[in-house]
Every structure is written in structure tokens, then in C-alpha cells.
Image (cartoon, rainbow, N blue to C red; front, top):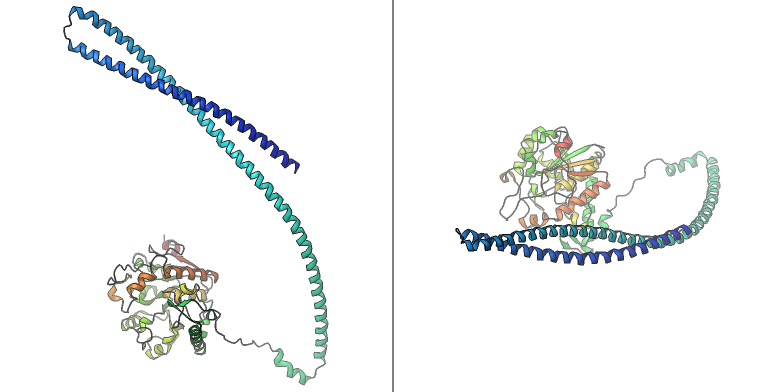
Length: 504
């Protein structure tokens, strides 16, 4: 501490010395400024005199030229005038030299002023350093008190820990004696008694009852944009739980659960339907794990890619919500023509019986997830369900509602999104949506213009859902990347598609 006090004393002495130097320099600076102003005034006066002399010289020359044949009487006057002009010219030259010297002196004074400014800044730094030293002293005093308190707390903690350890040792000794007595008693049991106890010590797994999810036990403020009361929420939660029970009892949950970790540690690609994929070579993905959705069957390179997983959560593909299922005929025909057994399709569990009756695809190609009403919107509840045995949340796009949770379920570690432009290009209610294919090939109804304008506005629900989905996926060990060419999706880190596929 004595060294710190000595340093502070030296610092104060240096500060006082700097203050004295600063005051002296300020006085010299003010004197220089006065002298500079006087020099500038003299310079201005000299310049005025020079200008006057030049004007007179010019006038004299003009007069001389005007008089082509001067009279002999005027020759003496002209000679005198020329002499006077020569004198005035020399006077002007001397004034100009004096002005140059004054200018040099002003420049030197300005250099001195710059030095003074530097000294002032050094003084200010010294003042700041003094304040820092004072703050450091206060912090040191606080830390000294904290160290003392910490030492006291540590002693108390060590004493409590010793007491706890002694208590645990005593308890273990008692439990060990009881266990030894129990083993001794079991040793003396008859064969019949051992047989009676066998079910109690069986190694068979204990079946855990299936209960409603924790998420359905917490009521949100609103559902689908409308406030929801407690009674209505309990009814909705019960409906969702019944659908989850039916999903498990049907055996479809077990079929999807069997795919857990299928692609552990690998990467995959989600292919959206935005117009940007028209500028990207999708054949580079033919050997990759790929997810596509909805009308991707329209893509001319579909046969070359043959996506690994085809996700359709939309009820509009079946005619709309709450209507008798009727899968779009154009969609049916294209699936029948292009789809191969290498692609697995995921539909909503609500259409399982209909798809069986339709007989469009081999049942081994079909899987289901629960996506039905009453459903939760990701941006409203602020989280997303990734448990494929529960009701999937509505994230405004099947790429998030189905594909991202499935990728996490399969053990994918890196998920790259392309064709996710997040820009329908709608400017009026009558404008067609913007896809990689012509609007005429979009054989199902689209969302209303008002809904699209609200959902896809800047920082709208869709972008919030992407952020929530990405955060949830990261907690599951899945990183999401945006490899889309352009577009408005900025909440995911961007990467180059060609760099990722190794063809840059």
C-alpha cells in the first residue's frame, strides 16, 4: 500500500507541474495570438498600399502611352514620375518581403499552438489516469472486503460440507447394515418364496404411461390470432391429446420412431419452391439427403434428383380444411408418373385412411405426422414442437412444420435451405404468386393476399418462425443454413450453395 501512496503522490506532483506548464503555455499562446493579429493587420495594410501603388503605376503607363509625342516641357515631369514609380515599386517589393516574413512567423506561431494543443491533451490524459487510479483504489478496497467475506463464507461452507459428509457416511453405514440384513433374509427364503418375489425383481422394462404434453398444459394468450379462455384451451388440449393417442395406437408413430437417427451425423438439403432454384443446378443434389414439398413435382429435374423425403402438410392439397379429402388430380398424376420407391412421402395423419383407399402409392413409401386442428402457431407460442409423436406446430411453411423436425429426428447435423426466397412477389390481390414454375401449374388454392402480406412482411410471423425453428433445432444438435440465391431470408446464416456442394 505504501508504494501505491507514493505513486499517487508522484502523480499529483506531475499533475501540478503539468498544470503550471499549461498555464504558462496558455499565456504564451495568447501573446502569440495578439502578435499574429497585429502582423496580419500590417500585412493587410501593406497589401492595400501595394495595390494602390500598382494602380497608380498602371495609370501612369496608360497616360504615357496616350501621349505619343510628349512636349519637351513634359519630358522632365515624365522622368520624375518614372523615378517615383521605381521608388514605389521598390517599396512594394520590400512590403512583399515583409509580408512573407510575417506569414512565416504566423506559420511558426500556429505550430506552437499545435504543440500547446498536444500538451493540453496530455494533461487531460493525466487527469483521466488520476480518475482511473481513484476508481482502482475504491475497487481494491471493495475487493479487500469481498476477499474477507469470501474467506468467511468458505470457512462456513467447509464446515457445512464436513457435517454433510459425516451425515452421509452415517446414513450409508445404516443403509448398508439394513441391506446386509435384507440379503441375509433373502438367502434363507424357500424356493416358493423366491418364485413369489420374482415378478418384483424382474428386469423387464416398466411401461411409462403416455400423458398430455407439457406444452398443452400451458395456455397461450391467443390461438390463431384470437384470445382463448381456460375452458376452450382445456378442450383444445384434450382434442390434441386424443389425436396423439390415436396416432400411437394406429402404429404410424412406431414406423416414424423407427427412423430415429437414420442419418446420424450427416447433412441434408431442404429444397423450397421459390424462383431462385431456377438459377441453381439441382442435379448436384442427386446423391444428397434431400427434402422437398408441395408442388416440387413440377420441377423439370425431379426425375434426376428423386428427393429422399417429400413433405405435404397442407390440407389444401386435399381440397381444404374440414372438407372430404380429395387429393388434387394433377398432383396425383405427376406423383404417379415421377415418384420412385426411393422417395418417402409424409402427409398429415388426418389423411391416412384416405391414402390407403386411394392406393396411389405403396404403403411402405407413406409416413404420417399429426398436423390438424386445433393447431398452434409457432410465433404465437414462441416455441416449436420437434417431438414427432406429438401434434406438429404450424410454422407457416411445411419446410419448418415437417422437414426441420424430421431432419432433427433423423440425426442430421447440418441442414441447408435453398429455394426459400420468402418473397411471393405479390403487390396486388390479383398478382400471381412467385414460384419456380408458372402460376398455371399451381393446381391448389393459395393463401389470401391479406394473409400473405401480413405473414411475409418484414419481421413478420414467417421470419419469427424461422428464427424460433432454428433456435429449437440448434438445441437438438441441428444447425440450419440459408443457401438460397438472394431472397429475403436473413435470420439464418448465409452460405454459398456451390461452396457447400463443392462445385464452386
